[in-house]
Image 1 (cartoon, helix red, strand yellow):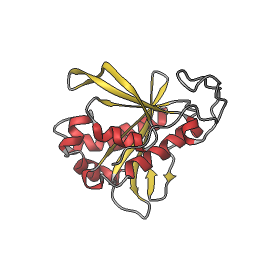
Image 2 (cartoon, rainbow, N blue to C red; image 1 turned 90 degrees about the vertical axis):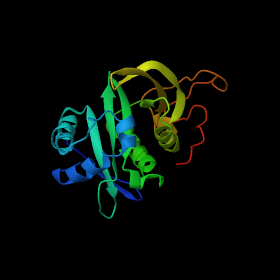
Image 3 (tube, one colour; image 1 turned 45 degrees about the vertical axis):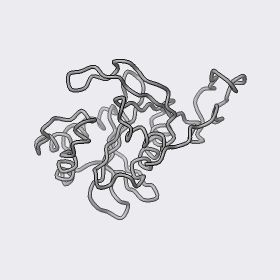
Image 4 (cartoon, rainbow, N blue to C red; image 1 turned 135 degrees about the horizontal axis):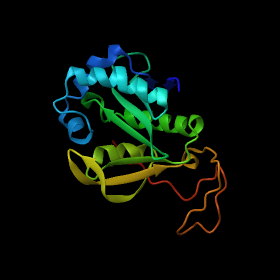
Length: 210
């Protein structure tokens, strides 16, 4: 797959380039990113260079990890990254944000754009968000982007040589007003009738503030 570029009201989501190595290096010195994201610690320039120049292009080429650098629409430094990646046939979303750019809704805006792209360009029928239990910041972003929280998976995340519980949420095409490839029959109250393609099933959770 060839890398693509997406735009939102405030952002440009584009492939990372070698010129972005230093921005990634600086952002990944943040203890919060090192706590929750599976990156090497200490994080050195060689790691940022390998990520930008090898891992990201390889992910696009194999269509397994499609990573976008998030920058201001008018140009500027990399503020974070969002990716859509495929795990055992299921598409998931991942993201991180540089400390100085948090709390402004940028990552939720970028995640929603990548989700729309995954549904329309990749044919995803469900997009999952997962994070280690306790990562409230990531969960707030996911909820603001429209993801519905579904629960906790025990020992579902292997991080820093330890099995950890994971929170899981999901976004469906219908949550964004998009048609699905198949009818969806939800369970629980208010689900007596099947929802056809493009018909939202049930309600969305109210987004949390970031």
